[in-house]
Image (cartoon, rainbow, N blue to C red):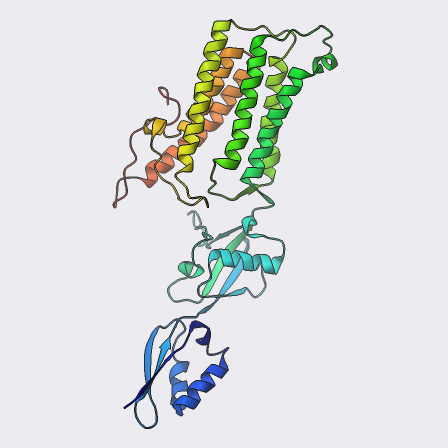
Length: 378
């Protein structure tokens, strides 16, 4: 009694597209009955099948999964984005699917795509977004080889580093223009401008802050999302560049009245401490993610994060409070209020999200009791 063991690799298991391999099996087995058996074996079956051969013994064929699946891509209105859909291997990831869509459309590069599972008509649930690192088959129903995904064009995208660089570069360059150049002559002020020490220190403080932000963008921050819509560049630049001009205009104005030296030192001293603390908070947040931006949501801990959920926003707000204590301009306080309002909304959303994710149930850790952003007020 003899047995022949043949391991059929994944590339050979697609019997419809590899007739030569099937012919070899027929010649070896010399029994056409094997074809009838193979025809009823569904794709994806794994195992060892034994077939009798002439003269005794058996032929063992190891089946290895090599599925082909069809993915239909539709818009939110139900229109088919790619006619006929796409055919992918069983091991394809969502990232592979996005690359295939880009290859077929030539327009929608992966970061411009958002793929979700379709919802039932009338459903108010949030659609499931396909993670680019997961396998496409993870989103199929049971053993189905067909999947329908809903495609949304996110529009032109830019990297977050590009976005942050341009929004911070504007204030860094605009502020010194009002300090060093006689721009106020063009606004009708012909008097000679006297530069007070607080105006010089404010220039250093301002430039240090935005230079730090640019350096953090390239060497500290790790982003969970690779890109942002291009429209955000114009929106964010309008915000930062406008406020930069607004504050610089009044801070360097010929009629500016300085505060006392003691108040100036207290304000800038407090603000600098908060700037250094803000940098340390960003370093702690950086360690929660891998260099590729992975890591998901985690409970931040250490330093001020032991008492405040969003210590990075806390130190950001308080450093501008220090700046305004030292400079005392209406423009500076307007910026402080607007920035505090925006960051408070971000902090509340993050705090509630972390409390929901870490609820202490089913083995998950329970989120500790902390301030949200502005101790002792919130």
